[in-house]
Image 1: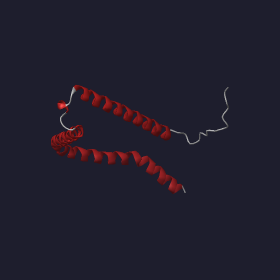
Image 2: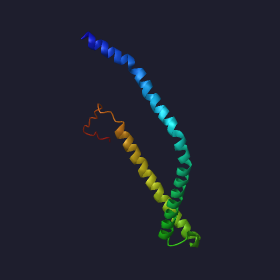
Image 3: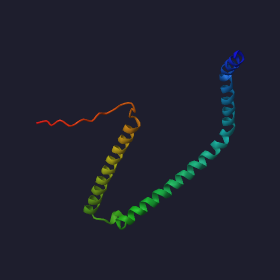
Length: 125
């Protein structure tokens, strides 16, 4: 029993040293890999930018197809009507997204020990 207690005490006392050694190994490895990662960082950023430009071009083409051509060819009234409709739809979607976020927050932060008692509703005259 005493041997186990001493062994556990030794393990606990050596824990900070073991953590330092592990973190040092990870730090040295990260410093060794840093030049390689930085060399590829620039090309990765350019590739991401190119992919984003292609994606935006595809989205704009899809929008133009849905509108039936270039929006510059629409009349002022048609552009205003489409813009108002799309803004109203966007507002509705943002409203729904906000309700969904609040619902998720409410569910995730609910206390399981809290009990809500429902009784018969009282009529107010």
